[in-house]
Length: 331
Image (cartoon, rainbow, N blue to C red):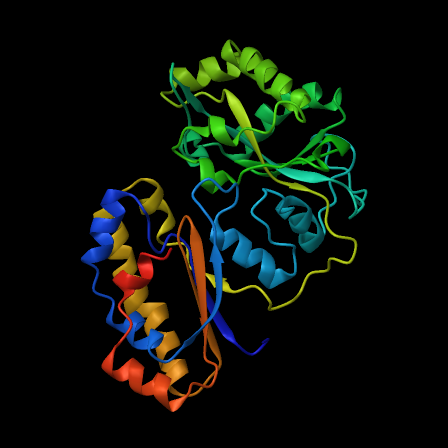
């Protein structure tokens, strides 16, 4: 499949009333033309409560990771292996010693929780407007508390660090995209198995509540950092290796408007995808090139490919073309 062009479109349809209304009015002629040429290959059916989104499981399968709906996709360890990350043993000392690929890792995202009496919402970390200097300053404040519990924090990106340590080996976590802008309480790690992390979360909230770093942020009109989210935790399977060219091309243009429930912007982004990458994929399929298309929602993902189709299937595609509104109901 290395010569196959594979596009993955997350948040292609949403189950909310606004999402369904926007879906019903979409006009995507290139996508519907493409679907008449393809055959359904795989169906990943789940639910809205699964810790990982369907497009994340689709990516895992493409690169050879075990794809389950249990919140056990070790994306941080995979990132370390692919990038050749050398974090050393300190939180921010820049040491160049190479970290074992067999270690347990997690992505660590500093964030702001909106805490209400009946729900706790995780705001988009991008709203923190952390640059590298501010992120490293924050890392230096938080890291010593984790070292005491066998977890070392390493800088990776302003709003995403790397955590390393044995407590992360068997930790089931929900992906960041799953919990953004939602009541996150149902996706918190199991308090029986992750009591240590629940305590660290409470300690960070107390530490950061009156910290001068947050006082300075408030004075500038910026959101405070009052929590963290761990995701992509675990160890890699023993035989895991990067697979060049295996991952599909992910078109994430629908992500932000979908998570913000900005349906006019979501529809506009879909139309741009249809006129651009989807139209190009349809042209490849029409020429007889090998193509795959994965459309993913919050519950399920469907993958089509350009396998040979029977005469009956071709005739059916002409007289009963696939409507994306019908497909979207399955996502």
